[in-house]
Length: 130
Image (tube, rainbow, N blue to C red; front, side, top):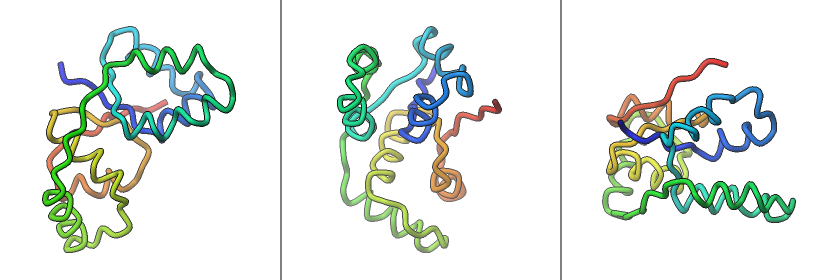
C-alpha cells in the first residue's frame, strides 16, 4: 500500500481539533503515513515553542521519506504550472510534489495548489470528508 504524506496544512488542522481529523489517528495506527524534512521543518518549531515534547517525539517516529531535489525538474514543473495558469506555487510545495511523485505517495492536504496541479501532473490526493 502506498504511504500517505500528511501535508503541513492537515497537521495544523489536526493539532487545532483532533476530533475533526480523527482519520489521522487511524492512519497512524495502521502505519500508513509518512512525512519529509520540509513538512517537519514547518510544523516542529511551533511545537517546540509550545513545549509539546511528547507530540514532537511521536511525529519524529513517523516514517520519513528522503527528499532528493532535482532542480531542473522543479523549474520545469513551475513552467508547466505557469503555462496552465497555475501561479504562486511556492518552491517548498513543488519540492513536496516532486517527493510525492518520485516516491509514489498519496498526499493529504488542504492546500488548493495541489488540487490545481493535479490537472497538470499525475499523482494521487487523499480524499477525506469529515
